[in-house]
Amino acid sequence: MSKTVYILNGPNLNLLGKRQPEIYGHDTLEDVEANCRKVAGEFGLDCVLMQSNHEGQIIDWVHEAREKAAGIIINPAAFTHTSVAILDALNAFEGAVIEVHISNVHKRESFRHHSYVSLRADGVIAGLGVEGYALAMRRMGSLLA
Ligand code: CA2
Image (tube, rainbow, N blue to C red):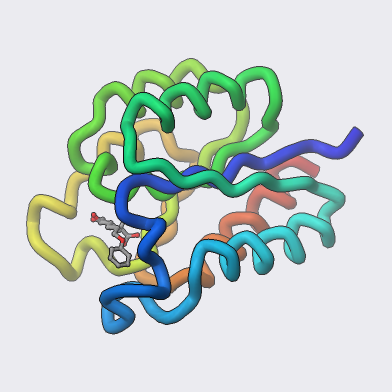
């Protein structure tokens, strides 16, 4: 059975490709999923992309990943900078974790410079646009081979 990677997305990312293209680009989450699926296939991996505006839902998906996924690619969006609860959930997950940010958070407001999730992430990608997700999947390919 092929290994599964969860691609988890936090609040407002449902608007990806529909608002603020100057910051986040024109691709939608559906485009992101298609690109990731292509790369995952190259490595014999499967993937599932999910998005929620609710912190508890993201935590529940991280718990579910303990049984169902070998890796998590996560863009926690604004929860990156606030959520000890998502960090705690990720600390209970034993697989690989890669944190992705579409924008270069370090070039933006100072409150975006700190990430709780980075304390757990095995790798962090920021500022490479939505390509960052596919690159994260490529890295998952190496980590989970
Ligand atoms: O750059 C990223 O990927 C962020 O995680 C995006 C978050 C932001 O709070 C983080 O600091 C950095 C915001 C996601 C909002 O997504 C939208 C997409 C399109 C239109 C409006 C919001």
